[in-house]
Length: 506
Image (tube, rainbow, N blue to C red; front, side, top):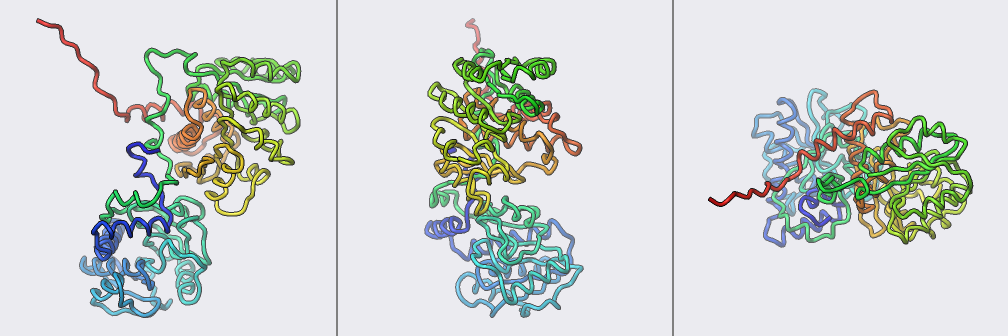
């Protein structure tokens, strides 16, 4: 993820953003100039979103409050009616003190009587670095904003929101718009922060891009810029055998799940897809699948026989496979076969089958592997304490696999500590079978040779993009058929080298 464009998607924790600010100042940028740019960006965002109306700016004691004083001054200069209220005494030191002194109007003390329901509240009480629950008068004002249903613009994050995790520390008032600076934070994307922030406006305040070098990049917001240069686009001289062969294990009763997975693997570009199913259900699969080869499993070791075919370079187990020892044995056989270059994606029943002994699964993971649990499946295998980003990272480290933790904000974590937050999934993806399709997208990309981390990131983004493009009424069957349009649009945006023109000599 060191290629061009990845830096724009970096997410910074509050601690990391502090390091970037210090690096900026060390590079010659004045802290007061950064604050001036931040506050003026807030004022411009407010003026662009709303018509002039009364504004109440709630300023805390730190730099977030300093940003608020700047925003108040600029809105006042634009002719807006502005009131400023301070949590404590008006700051007199540092950059916040400098900008507070430039505010020529009165400063009230926090009071719920100050709210004007016609106006906008600029929440500049606390920034993303808050580390303990809000209390006292700050809590009183936040709760008053919530009770009043105030129209809120938050600076950096809604006060009371942990910028690193998206967790609420005591209370946080929902914002219609949040203005943050230089780079987003994980808390802008992780729930419940994502819902509380409203529209997130990212403002350029003059932080040098080189300041990113002050922190090692570990977390990104998912975007094609992270993986599209390595995406397995078809080549004119390619053929189906070069595009890989995916092997999907189906079950005897819940037949729709693995059929969705196999169809999705085909749509994602796998050159060949084989669906291995119990003999008693073979006719169900064979009569409903056309481009997929359906192989009958007559004996318990038939799946291992299929694994011996080295052409199957990516394997998906879980959707509809059934919970029990037979699925465990199939998973372990697939993982044991990864010495021949192939990748495995495990979902649903393949994960739940190891609920009584997770280490049995983790000890078997030695090659490229992606686990795609939802929260319930995750909790059967892993420690559920902490926010989604922390849990996914810890699970990846423990299992040795790439972990794709599904949810409204899906997190993809690599065992080496890298993580990506996918935020483009609409609520319509909460439909039965959508996860089976995601597994198919992952295995289809793995079959074409994409790295497991890239495959998981690309699959999650494409999954969300297809659902967003389809809109209301989405069911899982719509997802594979909707993928070509999204891929076409993505392909059209790619940078294509001009063709080589050879002119004949005269």
